[in-house]
Length: 492
Image (tube, rainbow, N blue to C red; front, side):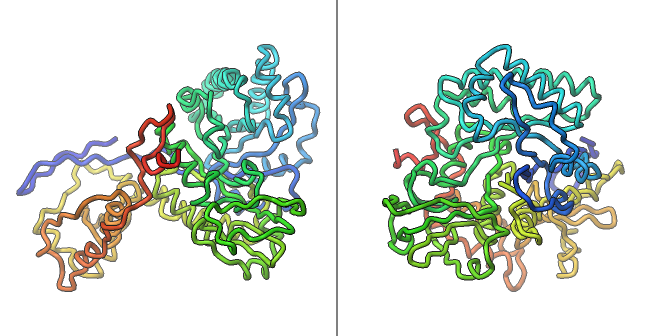
């Protein structure tokens, strides 16, 4: 931090601190990239990511990565080559584990010798291929192996931290894990220690039907009794008290059920219906394979905030631009640290869904937003007095304002003069905050300084403080030895 000497005005003496901002953008867009998909990886996809994770490096029975595999001709080799010019802004990682190695993983981490062999193998592979970290994709540790799981993460962190200094690396090597979507899966986990070890957690907030074995939405935002995105993220936020380390998961595919009723057409309150003997599915379809006709025919379910189609026999549930945009806005509003995409190679050639993720989630979070202020080296930075604010009263001057996404405020830095003020956008943000958190009222100082329209008072008067909000983002309480937001207590 660079300290700017205080400037006296008629009211007070202030000290302005200017951040030097040498850190990377704090938000993440993490993309999984697979060996088994066939679409070609494009550099413009990678440019929209902060981290890319290759799935999967195969594990051998002795707990080591297969070192005999020829990686240069694989999709992993293609990823490395295309990502090379984008480093260090883009972090390249590997994923170890997968759906098919649950039992092997359990055996490896429970055995001291095999666990050490896996840790050593991961570390060596990272060095050999100049990688930035590893994603532990274990889905999911059994309750009696969860202590071994934490030991494995702890033992993995130690050599990676040591390696960082040996390699003269400026930033730590990354360890990430995946998290289940249902709260009951967290029993027996030492989340406090896990959150101290890992850099971020990829929360798989999709495929909720796998926990119900019923017909239902792919990634319902709200509603239902078996879990939803909002409920999962609230639970993990309260449990960890660290939403900045959480990545909200989104799916670039849809799922089909054949020979079934439509739960939405029947208006089922629970949003799930049981499969009958003739129902088949779910069958996955990547976004790139969904026909334009099917996308155009999609209906919208307002309760779950998801699109779907139903032709009388086939129920198809998926994400589209609208549902993806709503999830990005949600993640920003709730200070979620990042987004994780399953998988970038299922997007279409125009990167339709990835563009939504990037433009909405990262669109107002540019590392360049504050560059003009961050690079100030002068020992003086004048602060406008109350009378001097009148110099910026025209619409042209207001249009000069830039936006600081950290403080959510507009400012003008012009002719060595720094002006911080409220405008319609910042006022609207505060009104929305008041609505979402059930604040009792708004106090204005002083309303006679508004313009003739009056523009700011009109924004303030639009707030609806009488509507109870479901977006309670703090005040977690203990219920049954677990953390739940107050709005979830009635469900248990």
